[in-house]
Length: 311
Image 1 (spheres, rainbow, N blue to C red):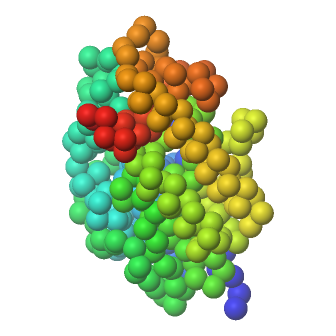
Image 2: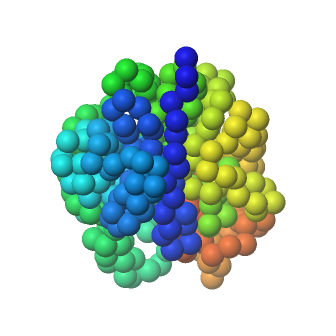
């Protein structure tokens, strides 16, 4: 069996590189869509250079609902003549349907710790700017489904943790896995791994390592090793195993520090990491925790809920 070709489609956004992927199947698919400008300004020219047309894309596969992954979905759908089928996990579908859902997510989690009176307005403005349109998905998944791209089988795997509705799309037979932001390693530009549910994140990493065992692992951003060097767009089997192992290792360290901090009792201080400054000290995190998407506070809120500390 000949492997289906995968072509990275990279677009910039502030401090981040956004990775989308074109699966060159009989019914072509694009995994993740960047922001509103990505389809017309990045994807269409890149596909033209490959001798492919964005109008021929028939599947839009979303790994999760964050704005830098679903932001271009409506615009891409329009460029396909509204013929492509948009797929997302049912738990993250509200983030595709509604810009307001992104504000609510902020207020329920990291926004509690940022002490920014204008924070919700900033998130609303970002959602307005980078989400090309609210829309209803054509297909909701839970994990366990198989999608046929005109004969190329793609299996859907639920891998919650980063978000409740994070999924991996795996090209069956060649074990090429598209995981979005579900494998954080040591984080991307913010330098800290971000996940809403630490127990689910840990279990999903183990599932990817032990059950999916990807021969090729495609990440959503240039996630970084412990020394700060970024992984590439696509990881071979050895690098995939390394990234999964490192992701589990750093989560264990953060989990231990978070447990100690929460057991000692949270205290508000002048620290930018308050009330979780002991965690930052314990793991040597020195970057600005307030820069969006603020993974430090997202993860800390997740541990607070995990340990039942009155979230």
